Length: 69
Image 1 (cartoon, rainbow, N blue to C red):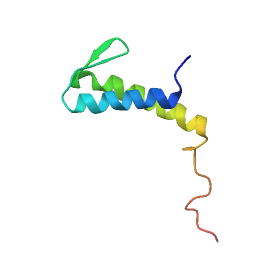
Image 2: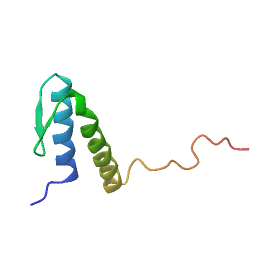
Image 3: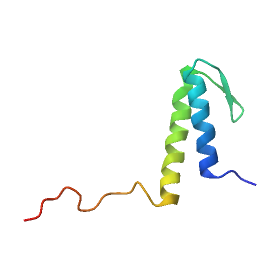
Image 4: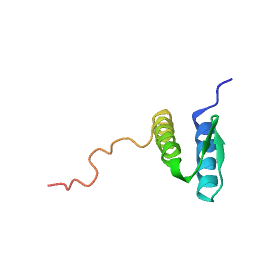
């Protein structure tokens, strides 16, 4: 059974935390270190966008901050 977006996001964020703590992590069959942290961050951004779309949050705010006349 495929993992949910939330589960995938949890895994990516745990891997990012481990890498930032100075550990080398195996993620999706690849060794990840601080030098290639940007790959995990890009994956996290994609998953966050998908998560927000699924939940219906994070979209464009309409009529916020427009003063009434």
